[in-house]
Length: 141
Image (cartoon, rainbow, N blue to C red; front, side, top):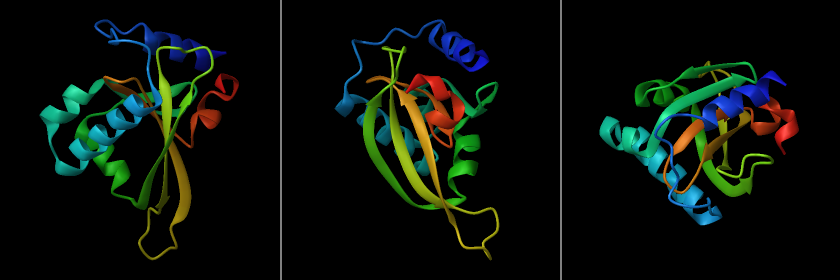
């Protein structure tokens, strides 16, 4: 329940007015721009591509993230692949795009498979959901 409250607060962010209903292609393009800005170290492009970007670790705990914060997470991962865009149940303003990658905290260990869903619309990305949306908000799929 608290996770859905967090999601509702995310949707109520001031200044977040999508240009229209999110599309599968549009949200994938938004995530591509987000990753390009992050990888390039381009803070201005990251800010244009995000809106109060938050990394969610659990349904009840997330933290605002700058480009540098998000880059710190992604630098632990290799073999990053952008998947398809999916509808988010009860949140018609956004879709998620699944990233799959292999990550490790210790370079001596074999990287493990990880998923991260990016919640976005055709204009901006608003959250990274570590472990996927099912792990953060089980009732939204």
